[in-house]
Length: 291
Image (cartoon, rainbow, N blue to C red; front, top):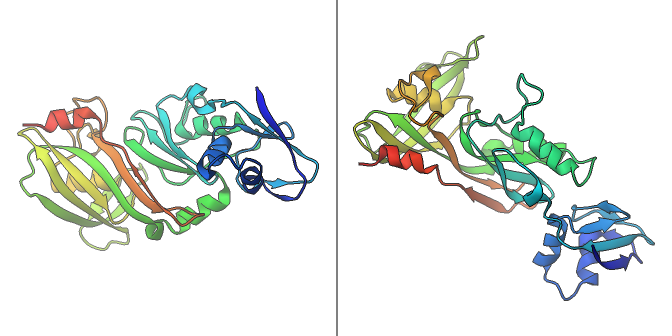
């Protein structure tokens, strides 16, 4: 239902226009109108702050559509969305992007359908991946330019990348660092070498949270972000990640990988603002490692 119709009398960006036409509303509330698909320009939902308006166009304000709430995601929850990025909490069991089955509801496919539900021309771009059985924080870009900017400056723009890992056995050390060179075989398995063999230098820092005779829970910080880095380094440590048969695990009590992307702190590719996203690991991680 349309609540208000506004006629454009000067050329300017959509956000500036709304702020001028809706002086009773705070800047945050006006931005929410855009975020929640409540702004329609010439019959089309527009969410971009800088969308250019032309003289004579009609801007309509509608009741909240709650597109995200009504959209039926499977194992994907949006925790932040703006004009440039979408940040999600991905469940274990969900592929980051397309696999062998073209109909599988990957995180990429679901988010692509979601953005197209309000604008058929919208697209998303994957910035980084999580393994199928790893849960937690993931970032997608809404434009190719933003994706390229994030990926090309990933090491610089990411201030912190923390995982929670449930590993097999007792780790007596309270903290430590693992450093090796990683190479990937033709069978897509990653191997670790303590010597520079031409592979990618990889550094993982860990800190013990709690543990018992069977399992230890670790806070893991990445200095580098290589494929399967944490999984391989935990095997190097002699304490494979729970459920990780590929890298030496013998037990799988949770029927999933004991790895969760807990937090990601990075510089926003457009505003430069420091963004901090944190999602606690599933309760089973703590229950299995408690005394």
